[in-house]
Image (cartoon, rainbow, N blue to C red):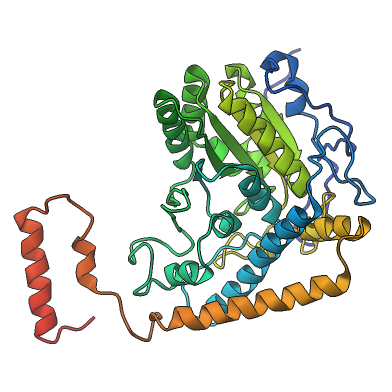
Length: 416
């Protein structure tokens, strides 16, 4: 008698009120995964998509073939960027809760994802981020005050009031504008990389999406084009375990690692400890070197954990155990890098506390300056007629007519 087929509904391993359960998370020992040459064939390195590249061991020592052997000063710079990201997030979260900005998204627990990659890439490489890559902008030279002004939609807003808060961009930093439509940045990154190859440049593109976004059609379209045309691009999947309130299994993470999504197309996948800055840096350098040498795309899965809420509109206590982040086997990326530097004799708890206070003062000063360019309730206010700018190279008469009518309303006391 044949068995009746059943529809499988993915379920998280723990719900609110239950003990956190990460038994599903397959880990490799630090230093246990071999590092192949950048010219290795995809078929010969399939294990990288299921194993996990890790450098920092339980004693916070850097071990194994993927150890990038970074200078201690460079690691201290990395720690500073990660801490700045966290301190900035804390301040902006508080500001939103005070009703002074409308919306915010933290990168709590994911700081190594952005900092490790940003420090591994060249400035000429084009970045196509998601909305939790704040540190990428910081490393690329975007000022804190400008990021704050974007969240305030004030007179210094880089997006001129036309974007949701936290959806920054930086032409000078080669960071593409963030889109609220998930996964659209993947095809953009592949297209940019193809153009770079056509022009004979050695610049590459890199993009980031969350685990949930791998279920979007744009994700698969991008992989196909990247594979067929061997685009010099790094495609990162940030597996932080939760897509808003939906755990990563709903996007297919139960069946196989996200790093394996490109194997059928011939794209090598690497699964990496996303909370280990040294591992993130080393894998990004490997993938970038491969792309610059004509080896094509690499799909990297960064296994991490979203420590806070999805956004200020979210309450994670409704769908996951309250203390789940504390139980996450890969720990806190900031704490791990700090302990590594201490173990190597290049850092102390006192230096760490001093740095935190310095960064808090820096962020506070930036916030005080940002407010001088206007807030949601206090001027100066952005000129509403700027909505007509940057739409057409040569504005049509009907648009100019609308601008004139708005100016007339302004003159007659219509206000803002």
